[in-house]
Length: 407
Image (cartoon, helix red, strand yellow):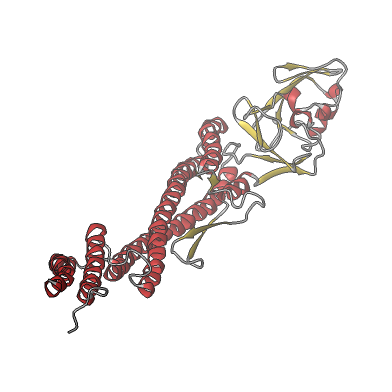
């Protein structure tokens, strides 16, 4: 080997090896400090791409699991409200069966009807209150009565991983139950209290007196019980002095009224239960007889009577039984649908948990550092660094040997 001073080949070799061992040392330190085998794209370009796809799937499944749990919560809210509806309907059915018995008097049925009416109003309140995060669950799509609400849940990381659960418009079925005694359609008044008794049809008079008496105040003197919903029980009274009607219930009428059909609901004493006049509004007399006003947003289109148990015999209560059974079937079918949905979402969550474990393990095998290997590499590179540094020092002293030749 030639002896020179301009090019120290041994020093260059030592520097090269020292650089390599230093780079390997840095890589080992980075992996051991981060716990990852892949810390940048240069560590493993293909492995990085695969692991990032897996990371997207893992994070998507974590969110999907939360979505499924939220879905279970929504279904449980709806099921709880449906359970309350079922309890009310069961009690209403008991009252209807009791009221169907011929041993009861009209007064007995009227007493039973007091609880029945309150429970029927509770049906609408409960159905309207089934809400989860602003979505009303038992009122269909909120636009067309009777349509289903399709509740879409994202239960996977992919764009096509959805689960649809149908919620029936239970509130519409409740309205159907109430609309079984429809009185009149096509009204044009936009103010409920301005609707007249003539708009509702000619009411009957309890006691066998002809209905024509209500349009002629001169036909009788005294007081008559008016049966507005034709169930055989008076809903309010009218008083005539033989020339004109003077009072309706407790309301004194204006002078000169001879045709009762012109009397408005407001004058009769029908008042909105919910404090408003436009649909959906419920009006009652003395807290018992109730009607529902339905509008198209401008005009009153339908006036419906709440189903009742009262009457001289049990025929009205018997007809109500069929309506209650139909509504109970609707409630039970919807609860079965929700229960099946809850069980399916439980299975979805279990599957996501399994997938998270397996996919997480697969990703870990790609990106996680092998500490046994890296600690061995760290020890090896540390020794090489120390040896390389020593050899570089020795190599840098070789050119000094030339001085001995010059001396």
